[in-house]
Length: 292
Figure (cartoon, rainbow, N blue to C red):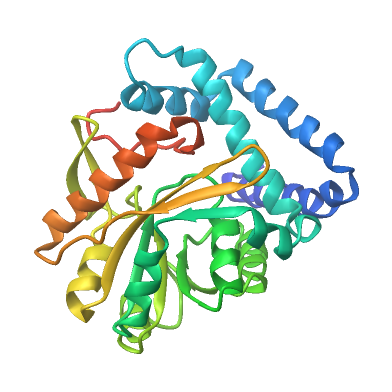
């Protein structure tokens, strides 16, 4: 079997697995589904694959001295499993529950920025459940635009595109779209719209170096560049799980200056959120430059 054929077969299997997840998990009672995902998270933790090892390495940098790193890594895997469980079961959770049980601290900063009518950029790390937060935002009368990494296979990307569009988001592919994402995002901001962008992991080779927990990491400069180009407010936000709901915080706006300084401002706000809730930071990829 050639490499291309193997890759195609693997892609089809991945898409099938996600399709079965979306359909099958919805049929299970909530306690059964939750127990199954916790079991899966614990199994992945014990197998200690590459993603788990990277997560442990990342958490070692952000956890305070004396932290039980094994326990924290296991908790983070359970948090990540909860994210996927809630994605698959969103229809069963229901929008009313999301609206009623999501607590967003200092949200006045969001509404004040939006009321200016000059565009708002909400920049987030991979924390908590950003899909639920997006649904909450739309339910509160603020549709927004976001950017999605183009997954492989294409059918899987289309599946996630449909899911997020159903939640009320406008989703722009990072690559392969009809127009460059930056130009389209600029248009949305100049019209007074809102963007929500995951911004703690750079997906290009042109990321901005920042100090993050005492070492050099690379984060995307797009949010800062968009804010400078359009005059939009740049608001960092962090999210975490509660026992029976979701929480988040809107941090103070990053002051306009230059792209490196503003990106460092985002990194500082992300660091504060991650330090407070490290188990809900789902970073299974490399972000620090000195990591092998």
